[in-house]
Length: 145
Length: 145
Image (cartoon, rainbow over all chains, first blue to last red; front, side, top):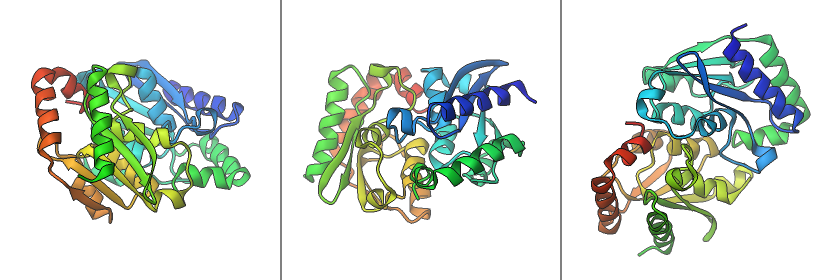
């Protein structure tokens, strides 16, 4: 298993342990994790801190040159907001744990030149499937449905 | 002047007074301001709290039905991240102070069915022009350039 995706999965598991939505993410620049995070809707009452946003936030303020040489790892296909953040900062590559339980804006990302790789990991699919079955209302709130 | 746009401009001015980037936003549901905010890159060292995101965050967790009957007011054309958040939550209408100093993802929003209204206010244009001239590096960082 890719060690960066492993770190994103660890973040997702931490979120689950906190009673939150199990989606994790890491921002990687030149083989180093610059920022890591997980969905904080429940823990922080946040509507904007999806896993990817939390990872970007934890990386702090960075110049464009850093983002443009970075890869964002996320356990789940990124929604419109997180995809928009990827486009804003010109992150050229996104590695996704799975897109079976939720398909985000991968097509938009690809159309804008972002390299999108989907690993389709059973571990990620299982974690989200269980969560969605257990907490459908919370999940719908998180994706605006 | 529309009172909600006036509130967004007040937020932008507050951000400027704090030494920050002068962009403000309010989320309005049934003629009431649910959330208000301004860009917090400088004040909070944040890469995700653009004005619109800060307004959404301050509105807290809301069900889809609320967003779908809301309007987002923002002093500046929304970037890819903020436009993505608008799409995620299904906010049907966005009122923009100006798009002369920065043109965000208005075309994407319209293509997805969002009603986009640009007021092109001199007050907003002047505030951004002065800010960009005084702090071009900070501005570029904020838009990932």
